Length: 90
Ligand SMILES: [Zn+2]
Image 1 (cartoon, protein in one colour):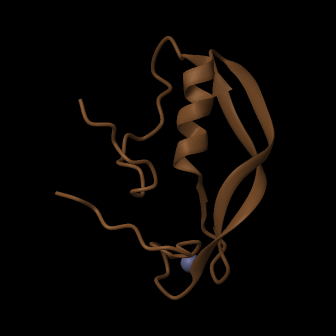
Image 2 (image 1 turned 180 degrees about the horizontal axis):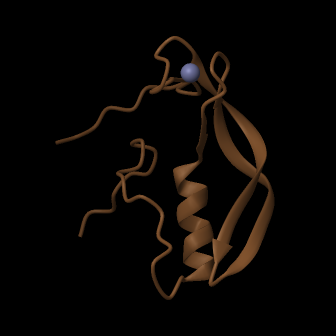
């Protein structure tokens, strides 16, 4: 089950409108942790150039939530990464 990685994979088709492409951008990420507002500037995200759909970078989200180590309820959606990180064999 080897996933092939293509090079120059810097654009993804938009899952919402299916017409645009998601382009890398840096946005300000807002979230609430433990009832407190948390603002993360310059957060890597992907933005559709047609409909404006925003998807925050999954790896960055994983990193952020690892740092925060949330005690409960607030978890990022658990989806497999976009084949960006090779899984170390055990
Ligand atoms: Zn779109």
